[in-house]
Length: 233
Image (cartoon, rainbow, N blue to C red; front, top):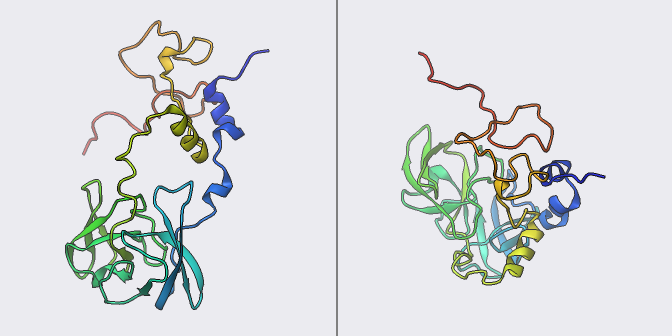
């Protein structure tokens, strides 16, 4: 009986190509309505995240967020305040220009969706009545609602890429814990029976664009664009 090719197995979503739910049991969001102060009760590692996580307890419960550089257990952090101190959750309109921030909200009250990777941070570059402009780690500028909140500081774990893996086994176990496919083999280097691009024969100078309704196994190559060509005015 024939065997499913890798593309089909990934499309089916078997245990090999599906991340463990338990790895993502921590939801990194701060509450929509929160004030006063909280306490860092625990710093812990998470397999699914690149940065260490901090468990914050306040009078209404507890939540998790990425830890900042220099955070310690027992530290107090303040919510919805004007005080610019590492770990405090402050509205963008109250943050001075050139301040480093992370875990930034896209809309007021969504709990923070931008900048959650270890060692990363954004910088407030400008403010106005209608928006606050920040520079993302990718050096792109983004305009946000002044009432959006962010955490002051830089996310911990900036040195995670400095040490090489050295052994393939270490990278294997890391990728497996995150449900990532590794090692990745180039499609043209496998056998013809294992992939539509296999065997390396008949290589085309132009990449293939897959059909939108193609099944797993045939849907390989570039995603089909909505439109092509120059846009007419």
